[in-house]
Length: 503
Image 1 (cartoon, rainbow, N blue to C red):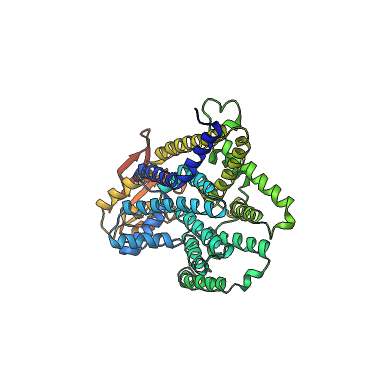
Image 2: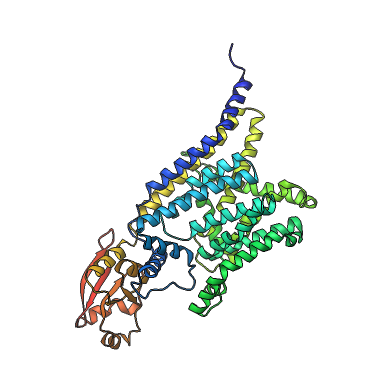
């Protein structure tokens, strides 16, 4: 006799359920393999990367006078400086970024499991593991990924301590971890507003009576005060407010909305030209999930403080909305997909919820069909996201390599006391380990070179533009400088030239 169809379907579901831990392990292995693939692919560092690395090298070895700009948080370069002192080089630092990425994927799973269920955790962590933004910035030494991981850990501590009230230790550790997130990337502090609004909506102001919360706040203040004093004494500015004042607020809403189809791209090959649905079904699932959450909240507004599912909706929506509004209207920075890194885990929770909702509807008719539909979405998303990640990582892998080549050449052909006039200060400082001076005004350049005999080279590039007059100045002053080294782009066009000052 054949096995009953319903019995077979149930056995399949039981098999998935019993092996959920093995599925998670498989996801982590896939994530690790993808990240190891790109660990050393980038041949040079970008401006922001070089700033953190150069400052760290200076803090560790006091090689130059280069210092951290006041808009930069100090924790990442401090960690890198410690690694330099221990004996690690750039490869070790890249491994640290990989570890942050893996921990972030794991905490995406933990949060999905804790707030919803293990399948939300598994689907969300898989989407994070193949997500092109996460893959791309794992291969870059920037603050976005580490601060997102600390955001996830803070959210997990908040959920376990303040919402589920499992242990005071979760609350106590929340403050220091949150401060670590802020000192890694300042906008990480937006999570405070998520927590605050969630507690006010769901509890009123009763949470203020929680003595463990005040202990956590006190610990956070204790951790933050040394930095605040150092920041004020170093820059004569108030911490947090100083960096905030550097950027003027203007709307980037249109840009971030236009990013959505790229960020959540998920194509069905051969059908993308028929309808946008076949290229953006992750985005459609996100929209469906948000609409369901909003509808539930409006319909059950009188139960917001009682219904646990509504509370979960509140937390996830605040998690998405608050960072999005900040970067769309107040950040004052050119829009980039990485700036919204905080919200991506929450969007994957929403997508997973919508996907499982559709699964439940199809399951009423056919379990196998429902399961195949879910797997199809997940697999096609993985193919699309990893394919896009592979393309952009490879395209960008050689960007700014001319600065690395120039900096390495200058290091070999100069003394420690020599100085360089150039833009692209962080990159040249990091690779050349020499003091870099920005271009003086055109009417001051001759006098400046006469007074500063230790200026050995001038560097002009199209990668980090100099004042317009500088590009013709060497040709007009061949008695003062001579070209000694040039680097070209992929089309063999000169893109960076080193001039030696005649002495």
